[in-house]
Length: 93
Image: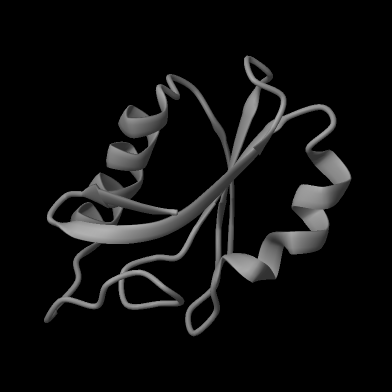
């Protein structure tokens, strides 16, 4: 699904148990959220999993750069706000 946050539409998927501890999965450069398919499948019975395509990747929008680290942080904070996520474990490459 596309969620607009921080001035950009980001593609994301949320799966797993409502109310369970959350894990946010951030992919490596030149990848997309599908990098985490097997992980999400294995852990969605115990966790709420948020996977997203970073700006300029996958099905997310690619506005003109440069992209800064604070900008990328605001992107994911906007996703957390959208889904009501107050705390999350972070897995990233």
